[in-house]
Image (tube, rainbow, N blue to C red; front, side, top):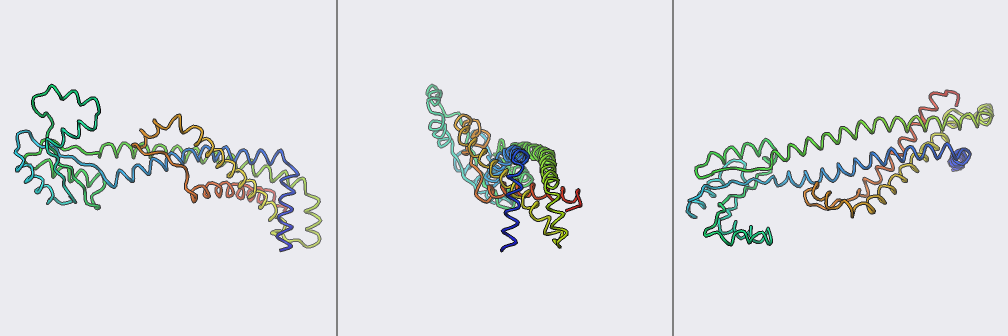
Length: 297
């Protein structure tokens, strides 16, 4: 316990002994994690939408005009027996008209001048869990299109593929930016620790002469880098949370459109802890790089 207390006091003394350099290291880590955290927050929200959409993968088969309702029901039963189809719901022409009237508000007045219902009947298909993928969706769509009485099949497969490409692009940008910013943070922390080593060179030499091991001498500096990183991660988390709460009202409509109508959410507690831990890891690794480079501690 006495040794741990000395390590903690030594690390805190190092932080307070060079407040300017420590502040630069903490700020650099915070800026890097704010930018990376912004990407991670967007990717988390977009990934949640993709998971929900992928669990449903809407598939609609539009039926030919002129089919009698018994024929439509027979076609729905036949579609339900296709491989990869979990359930089928028949939406009759009357139901489709009612949905249009209740779904578009005052735009339903456009239908008042029509003498007959212009909307076709359709089949709403729920895929089996093993077919809830772009490939499975394409296979079921092809089977439906071959059924007599099916005029057109519409699915969200193209949307899913486009969304996946956008998600992959954002992820690649985040990884590239993370590599650059992480390297910058490591160099700043390493420089801070090197300055601390130079400032305490005499103390380290005395401790070495009285028998202190290399691990004993290095631990306070590793702890100092760890604290700088944890402070930077905590600061980044506070900035992200404040920006999320302040800026969300102005961008909520656009974000909900991007996220498919879902309200944006902030990091879960485990994700927030991971952000702070990432900062601590950056600081610890930067300290280790400095100590290896110096070789005297």
